[in-house]
Length: 250
Length: 221
Image (cartoon, rainbow over all chains, first blue to last red; front, side, top):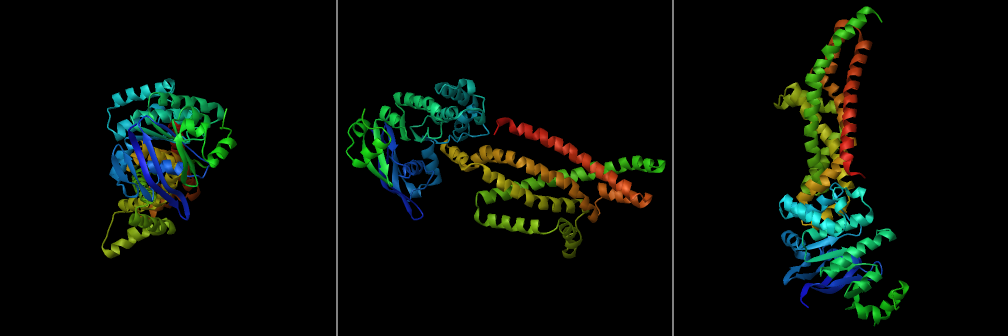
């Protein structure tokens, strides 16, 4: 399959702490890649570096053949890159002073100069897609966590990104609300959306992801097809990790 | 109360209120508007950590907050003519009040800006907005809501502080009262009367604050 996004030699340290020790990562078009690993393994930092929310100390990033030097990318290059990607946060980060619809249309109207009428049409369509048309004029504070995260996904979809990054999208949710978010993500995967997902949801990784990256201590320990990863993990560490989370075997 | 005193109070009410409407209120409105502009700019350069400007802002706030308002009024009105800068009483008062209030409100605004979660900024970047777009459409509106109650406080305080302008010959309410006292020798009644008029002004502002907060609270917590 055609490579869409690849990162090479990504390194990042916070003071004395080496968080990423040279990560290589490849995502093909239509891939759903799950990044798993114990907390503190650097998964979230990697995802944030890949969308320039953190500046990597070293590394290159290639999206559709265009390569950026991660620590030296200019503001303009980063802005152009971000217009082709989208990010879904662990704690949603919906704009608190905007309604659900405005959250979805903001990136279109402000950053891409889409005419308001057209943007709102897209906005309603995206809200419908995540099952929230009836909440278009609610503010984030009036929505449940699961609804907020679905609006955040609608916001990510609105700008027609080539890839969506998800940073533990269900970790802040009450258990009974996790399902609605995962089911939206499952639909996206079925439609062929390319996604890179940091997650603790083994069942989601297993059921939806076609590839899995396992990180520990700032390095990639294993990288495999989901089937092989869960079915017959080669590394002892992966086996141990999966068994503590009850994700191994049937 | 004697009949004479009642008549003095009634006669003086209009004479005190009129400079309230023509001097105290314009002085407050103009000065506070300028103070808000100063405050937002000073808060933003600190928030965005613009190197030299940030230090200038810190220095300005340090000096202005550390010296008495009355001294600042005297420096501008009685002091500056010594170096050839002669200003009328009203513009002197506007300059001093806006610079003074700007320093306090800058701190309010800075705190309010810093209270907006950094995730709001990150989400803005991720949908492709620029820093300025995010500030204008996302961060500043949220900060203004947080800052609104303390800023209302500052505004109400300023209405009363304008009485200090009488010291540099601005004929606002307090100066008008002093003149009537000099003619009638009824200090207790008249100073209480002007106090009540200040209270009236503050009451109106408190009401406005409540209405403003209600509107700003439209989007909930």
